[in-house]
Image (tube, rainbow, N blue to C red):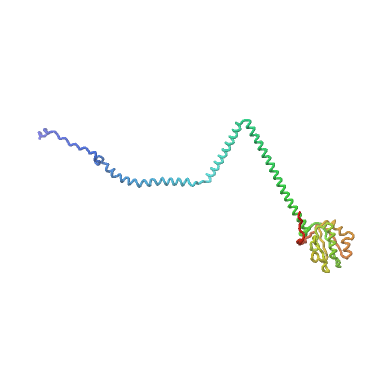
Length: 297
């Protein structure tokens, strides 16, 4: 046993492993199969995840557009904008004024004299225009006043003509003449004579009882107890209400051989009362003219 052990032959070398074939991917890259197998699956898994990733970006752009348009202006922003505009306008005016002053500082003496002459000429033109406008205003005011005066005079003249024509009531100082005729001797001609005396003495408005006397008034004898004036029956006592100067009307009736004396001869009584205010309120109805027309000027 000891002999065999001591005389052992050389040991047989161990077999070396065969080198790996580079063409075989399975052997050269153990993890290659795993990566090859996981490639399509990874692409399949990463594809659906890419679409949701783009969706938040489009939502952000849409929210940004919604926030910017249409613009929403608050009251504070509007006030700030107005203040900024006013500030900019003031700065622009200040800059322009400063530039004008700088231009004047750098201008020559001849230019400054020319500018002053132009300003003086412009001031004179403006003063002339102001004077002309004031004159036009004065003329218009005078024309307006004259028109008002003319209207007032026309209105007054119409009223006066209305009093004479019997279409307007009249009032003023005057007399009241009352004729009592118990015997019935006063006729139409005697009333007409009384009317003519009053007109000659300056009577402006006359009323006999309730009949207004006008230029075309006429008298006729009516029933035994009265007289007709303009076709209307008037009975005694005959009452003349006259507007005029009492100091002229009373003597005209009392002159010798006048109205009062004539009435007394016919046993009638005439009573004259002077008053500071009498009222002639009877109104005459104007009759249209049949033949007369206003003459052309």
